[in-house]
Image (cartoon, rainbow, N blue to C red; front, side):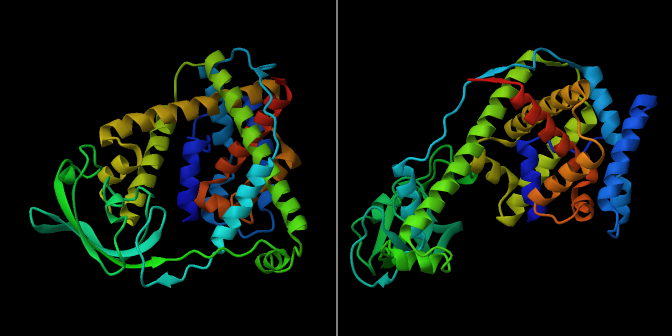
Length: 386
């Protein structure tokens, strides 16, 4: 699971494993030696696997950066103007957090009588019929449904409002023309639905005793816990603001700088990683790849292929530009600084050491991410934020 989550991260940042290229420059060779030495230091004392030993040779990273420089024309990247995003936590946001904690800890006893209302959580059995025949994946027993969640096609949840516990209803509906499963698009369907029971919702009281219980007595008063929640929310909002600032800078970099040619093998590799991610997801949900893609993105496979290619080009362009800036400005971390930053990357992704991380993704990936963070920090520090 952790590997699949990390592959999804590849869609959102430029953590791509570089492709090996020849490098004959003495300057590049020196950089390679420094980078390789740094990663060897980071793995020293740990039992290295064969894959790790191979991946700590960072000539691939250095050669890739040199190739990027040859294919990137840098425009203005220093002193970029970005509007400052003010960060604050309102009382309403704090209350929403408190409410969510109460919801998570609500008692939900079953109700054996009553009528279904909008917003209720209920338990149902249902079977769908097309032309009098039950269709595949159209039935379930003991299914928990929140009315108004839009989990079913239009008319299903609305048709259960007013139904009594124990009542069975027949709902004559039509699948939408753009339904993810082509076999069901536009088809008339009749659902037989039985309401087994309702769920009541009893919220706990927000008081000192509740706070002590949910925090295992780490906090014993509502005031102290609310102060902690407010501080956490502030950290989250600051992280969002920082991310937004970086995205604005990246957008300007893509406008100001030009990528003349993409490394085709790296582009293909990135697209394949995306395809593999969604193919595995489809297998996990026992769905056809085409159905999953349509349900998530309302796209046909050929549209998704084009979307993934364009996304890959955008992400790869960002990577090429950022690493080129880092090389030109001489700000890519080296030596002990690189060791420290690589270890931070490793730990931030849920690993304890570079060996285990490299066995899954290669040490190159950790190094490239360490480089990216260093350059983005430099770009922010040298931006005109006001």
